[in-house]
Image (cartoon, helix red, strand yellow):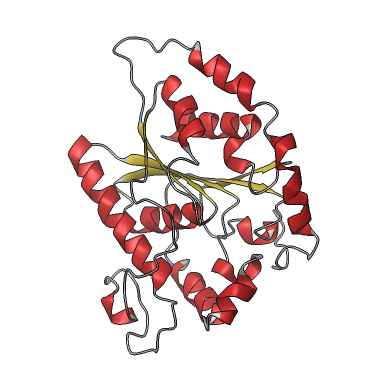
Length: 262
């Protein structure tokens, strides 16, 4: 796949998110078909954890989790409430774990928030994997997908595969429609991008399934692509950002990826 120059969605891209209803047309049928699926007794598949996007919680991923559970997977939400991007988890960079190779003395204007949330999620996945005695497959929508990737990067033996839905793989908030809000809060989005690129020097070794859409009105689709993971597979869909986790075609891609790699 040729590298595309990174850029955020155009000013009018967010307007296309109003068409999210079109992306949900197949949802009732998919849920109905799932409700009629009979899981073979005693036959269970891998354990899956689904992470919501920024500003959302496990309610937003409940339909997808129900669909996957009816296919025999052991599915759960991320269990951390609303994804606030890590607001209030840490005060400065010195509080991050040793997994992050950053300048601990650098002033923090909020750049510590998402890394701190990644640390929290990494600890949760590690504990859960040890509890069930098996690696966990991670599915993440938008920011949830970025977090899932960083967890997988740090826990290669405890995460079996990663699936991202319209996630800002490059640049963090820099190539999204919320970039102006982050800048207004005083966050250095250029520094965030640099630190994300530094992390990529240690590639994710597990299978990575990247689901992206050129209709995405929140995250620039070029920033959703994975050019560094050796086992990355890309799946382009025609869907709004808000509809990615609720689209029947996307669900089938997620299902196939889990069946092949989880």
